[in-house]
Length: 374
Image (cartoon, rainbow, N blue to C red):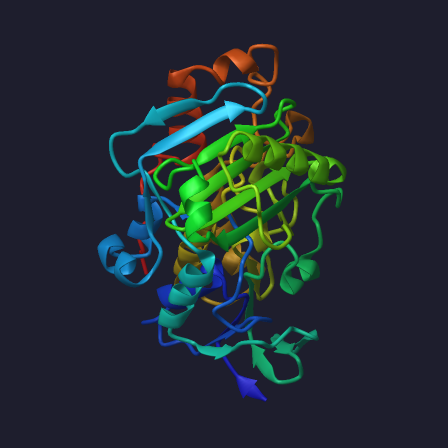
């Protein structure tokens, strides 16, 4: 049996950031993931300058060897209506490929790694977690996304009926002919909200790579909405008419609607495993990174790994992201005050789409970067 101080299940941005943040802690860390890296990951793929700052990544250096699409504008509208385009006058975000970005973060994480290693069993014996009858540690961190096996240990929380957002998307490298015909621009992602405001679709171009997708809170209508959106975008020339491959699905929880506990004796959840995606946008990379940084600080300072010692992590999450509303009737994307006949008017407003939708809900520009404090 191999002994560790902590085991992290999940090698995405949350898990790799936690291992990176604890690099000078002297703790022996094992990071497990069911897949080998680099691996495909369904995600629109964009990060704000705040994320790059928190991760101490120099965009210029990163962009020399990886896809990094500066974003200065957003094109926003409701499906079936004209879009509004806003120029922010500076780089407000970056388009990235998760295939590259996640591999970069994992590669720099100072930890032992067991990749292509699905978690088959988790047992608790004498204050130790035993994984696959092979590795053990007193602290187990779930960072494996919505379906993380560690999250299943803690259950769904009060009620057990969390609102799950389902999304489908495709990312591919365009041929030279497709790239010429595609009207979507790399520095101007497109966000198209469903008429009922229960979801939105996107078109993100990153150089010659194109990501198209749609996410909604009601899975049974997802494919119909996606097909309508793709057909409209193709008819208008925004995207190529010949899309390769099939759209892949994934799911996640929104922060205000997630009920699963964040911790218990000897266990913590971070990132999508904890249900931390921003409620208004569904964006999960920044919450994943920041939750990992907060967890690293708590792990460093904890006198032991009991729930009472780890409870400061839950408090830190609440202070950073706010108290969970736990009100499913508010819907997914928009607050109740937007979901009324004025929505169409608001979505045609340059001020509203820029100051509220983009800068506040999607970019969170009013929230300063979280710095590594361990």
